[in-house]
Length: 103
Image 1: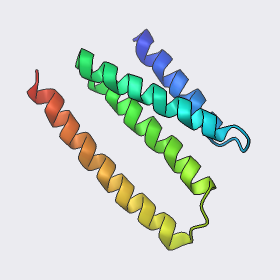
Image 2 (image 1 turned 90 degrees about the vertical axis):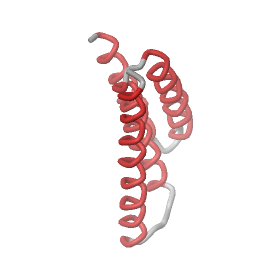
Image 3 (image 1 turned 30 degrees about the horizontal axis):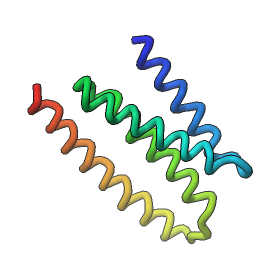
Image 4 (image 1 turned 30 degrees about the vertical axis):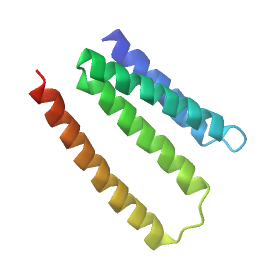
């Protein structure tokens, strides 16, 4: 329980820093590094929630960074969300099936 809370607070703090103009790239690097660690822990401990945290917070951070540093029109932004969200859901479903089959 406490580990879940701590991981969520850490991820939320890193995501909130991604939007900073001066040091956003450092927060993004920290977010991706922490997400990798969380995903590795999820795989080792067979805990899907930590993979979910890594993927969702990572997606949110990357999306914030990409949208701040791009000059896309509305169609480009809509296309980005449609393609990446569909890929994200498909990947999470596949990973969840993998986690369930290993039990």
